[in-house]
Length: 298
Image (cartoon, rainbow, N blue to C red; front, side, top):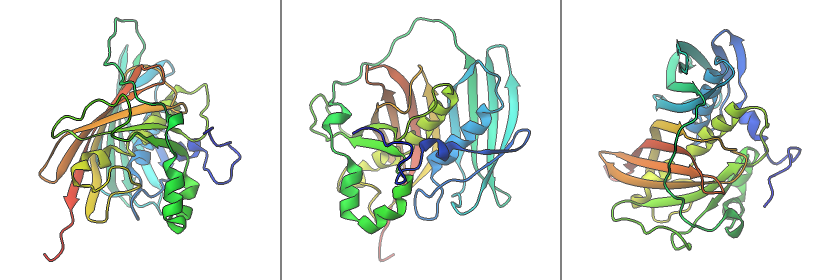
């Protein structure tokens, strides 16, 4: 399926999800839509925080890593203020710390590192030879048929494309005991500007938070592919880290290969790798998720 045209009223242009307003030097403000009911979507909070950090960086430095902690649930009905601390500007590397605040309370913190590009030898893990996104069904169509009313409430935020790979798809690597896995093709639903590499990275930061939590909870879910966790599960991102290895476009299909090597103590760990259509490893992500099974009669 082709990407939605920017003028399609049913789709929010993805760039709008990253938009923030500059209030003063090192001070920005944005708004985030809900992920879970009445909770701002963490991927959007992280993406906007990274956008704020990038606005304070000299041209020529690109973000190569980020580390974030989700401290309180954000309110999607209220704006979020992003305060940027210019920690360091070295010859090659620069570091920024961002604090996201609502109602005078910190809801999220981010540390991001930027660097100038340099030449060096490289290597990478080989991408598994799985089917491309064109061969897979659009899950949004199934979700709309399953719950049209609920889908209509959030259809305005369908600013992205997803394709889930079934566990028995050709080329899927065998699942190791105790390590559930989930493979998803992702991209933004509308094109991004050609002249702003920061937006590509911020968009991927948003996309990276869509399915890692469900990967960490696969051992508790009765089915693998769903729009949200079953009602008996409580999932919430605790922290999130990313490393950006090579240039990419987030508005072109990227394979997100995810695995969860551990779950215990009410927490699940998931890590994932992003590959482009040519099999180039462009980014990695790791997330720890709150995973609680809601019990009745207690």
